[in-house]
Length: 395
Image 1: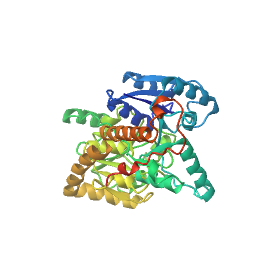
Image 2 (image 1 turned 60 degrees about the vertical axis):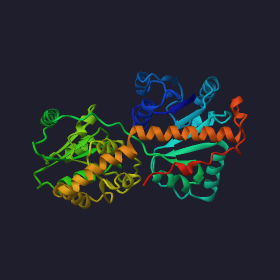
Image 3 (image 1 turned 90 degrees about the vertical axis):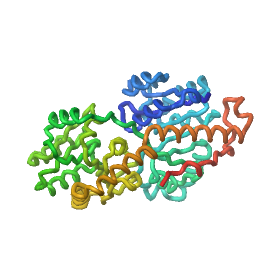
Image 4 (image 1 turned 180 degrees about the vertical axis):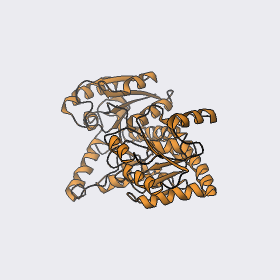
């Protein structure tokens, strides 16, 4: 039995938190004992406990990537629990607190921002590589684009595994349930629903979504539906007030139900994406996708969607019209979306890949230092786990 401590800094339930819940839900409890460290007051805590997983709340500094006040509580917890694996999500504090320990250390990278010129400088790359070697950390990149960003910053290729985030399949509504929800949301019967599910914030591309809807305002069979809350919501609602076939729903608890109504699922981001959960959930329901070519979007759309340039409303509108009018292409992409979800982007697939990584890293560590299992203290940094060649993204 391997004890795994997950450390996450989210107080709200974001993408990383949803991925963690999926991982916990599908973890093989006959082989792994998961524990979770969260900031005090995190909305994730009751959901984690509902899965039968122990939670530990950090009263100070737990919601920050790096906090000196969190180092000692984390080290003390690690020392007491003696984990085999420490898996972090954006918590540098946890990685630092784990330095003296013998546990396998893994950090999942969810963001995909191109490194700056300073980050790509020789000195910065050497510092990044040195910390990586001393800490013994192994990275999970949630998209191939994240892996490329990390190597550009100096990460060693043999310390990286590409494992896309996996989503749960939403419940499938029957025809009566769909009809009732469409009526409640004011969607005309027979309309082709073009959906976007994302936080309404800068970089998510809602402006291009609205501009494409405006270009297609004469297409009466199209209905544009945006799901998600955010700081730009009211401004965009006002901008769309003259378009009767555009609706910004805001935050919804029943996102999975609303995804059932989409005929087409969009991701219009123009800054960064890795493996968006809304796309994975849409693919699980057989929805073709149209995405911008940023981050990991193009990988997700391979064989099951269309890719357009970011901020290009005309290209987005053309892709929407193509899939609305070409029913043969739509059917092909719909079937491919379901297959690609099952083989690449399901929570089950993600968990299996991560558990295989846990086992491989643990075995490699024990072979490198067979006496390490008898002590809590880490072996010297020369013990490096070189196994990532088996964990590249599938094409």
